[in-house]
Image 1 (cartoon, rainbow, N blue to C red):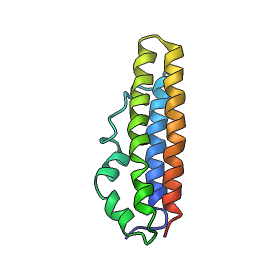
Image 2 (tube, one colour; image 1 turned 90 degrees about the horizontal axis):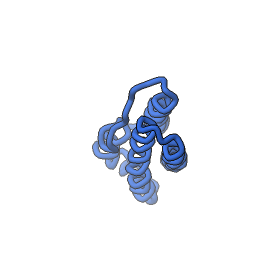
Image 3 (cartoon, one colour; image 1 turned 60 degrees about the vertical axis):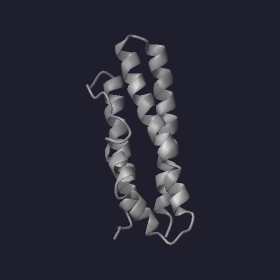
Image 4 (cartoon, rainbow, N blue to C red; image 1 turned 60 degrees about the horizontal axis):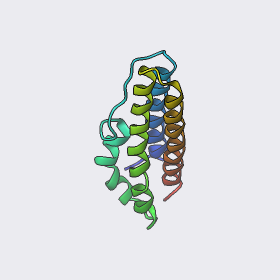
Length: 119
């Protein structure tokens, strides 16, 4: 059974991943990122996520859950691309990929907050 903060924990997992990528881009880390299946949020999406969301009584919950998959995959790709471009010395392209990553992150956060508000 999920607690009230369940989806907020998934949000925190996502934010912690984002912070690790940001640290690398700032020169304060060496995290290269992972694919979208290998992070904590990805493990949840691929694992117990459908059952957790399916247990909600809101009939829109599963559609909201499904809507997180595409931006989550693109978020990971943009983050990895930003790190690669930064390491290759292309600061402008790295900033562009980082901006894309942050826009996608905002979408992911909104979806998780929407799920948190569902019953």
